[in-house]
Image (cartoon, rainbow, N blue to C red; front, side, top):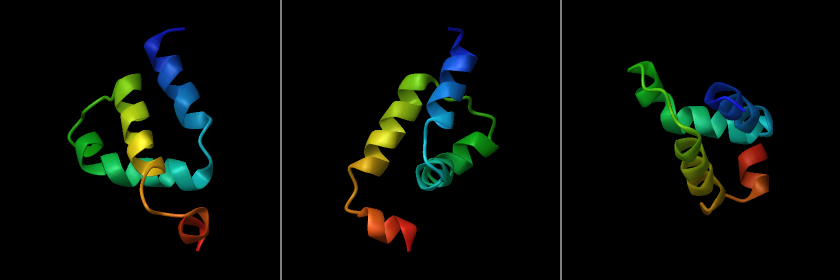
Length: 60
């Protein structure tokens, strides 16, 4: 699977709350033209998922 499709697959598998949190976390870097690799997305998601935010807090 080409890298671009791999990244797209990771993003499409996210629920809307996770996708929004990921974009918020990476917004500045993306605005500067940075293109994340799959490992970058996975690390960012790990950071999001391991935070002290409960599902109820995210959905509120």
